Image (cartoon, rainbow, N blue to C red; front, side, top):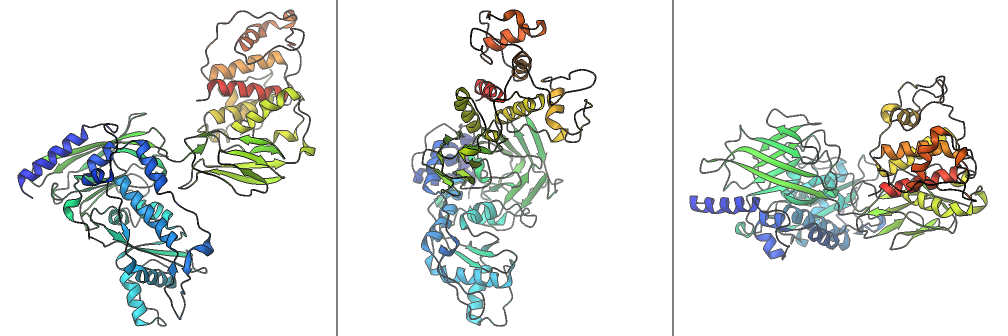
Length: 610
């Protein structure tokens, strides 16, 4: 490539970097495939979600994977995968390429079907991954050669029966210690010249990994000038789904060697900055922690023969709306000019998720509930529809007693996709007032209650300990990251509370609740309504709530409110956290029941939920 061409591509590169992720709508696959940088910067979250729905992974019963089952012992036979299994694997490949900004038009090379199956059988026979396996003594030469041709030209994986998962969480992840240096599996899949591929799968039930698979990787049938790029990043610049990236996965940038000098690499460093807290990681050749901060440059041929590989070691998760700025400094162009690359990756979530999966949801036979989600759901699934079924809108109907899992989407990875539901028979339900039933059911839907409430007489007065547990349950639903584990080993400030009683110790330290005097907490003492008003205001203030400024409220029994509780009672009523009882009374010395507590937690939650 001459200097004029280099400058032309550099100009395109510089211009693209100045374009925001939402600069232009995604128009057509042909436009997107012509230039990687234009493709990733122009597409919206909605474009990616539409493509995701085109390539949704499928779940197959294990006895439906093979049209012809392979034989992994003598006499060996390759077998054949069902066409829909192959299509599922191809969909994963094309979706990964689309996310990287490459043409998502790779097809299956059916001429390699038997070869790839033979490679999977050979690998399963050995029970381990080896690109150059030895010949078993009882395997025919021609079958061995066919299998060897596959293993020596393929990505190999073990331990997964889903080829879709293998593509994303095996090959594209490439986070094993033996893969970090090269991320070779990933780079073969996002090789710009790939046009065709083929897969194989075999099962060895008595082996360590069970399932063994192959993916032909060496195809280079696409013309070089069909894809124009300055670099190919994973995760890409622009919008990118957090569903397909885990914190242990390295990032990689494959550089076009027509533009960038792969010989002058000793000074290269990468800076990654997370916008929400402005935390930065500076990574260079000194970062070689295979379990933490990592950096490497690889110039071996894996589709593109110049890759910068890096990972910030203390990222716990990639969250929706997280934005990361990546800057690669001290690169050299082939004309000798020193340069840098800078791009922004904005994460979002394609899959819907339940808002709070930590709490078990209690339901009664015949009851219907709809658990709140974030995102737009593509499907709902019940693990046992005879216990509780779920319709396409997410409405769960309880049919008989038992435990069941309800999943929303749940196509990829592990997230907040599944809720455990416990269904109990109505005859076991303890007393609950009619006025509270709707509120309690709504609190259960939100996941505010995690103590099987229907087993308790909810009309009884709540104890101080129970109140704290209800508060922590509500706050955990508001903020799933709330973590009390540091309090498990803390010394209790009260003589009647055990060390490590995390909820009480935490609530005390946060000013939500105090002791009752003489070093005691009195966990089993019940609460009055005026005491509840004070504690509820403590919770409200902890959450950063503001006064409503409403008119002063007067009750017929106003004079019975203790002086220390007068202000709290007024505020609690003005904020609609508490109300009066019959006869325009507040009943300050009356019991504050468990059902009242649950309904009040619901009111607090709905005031502060997003």
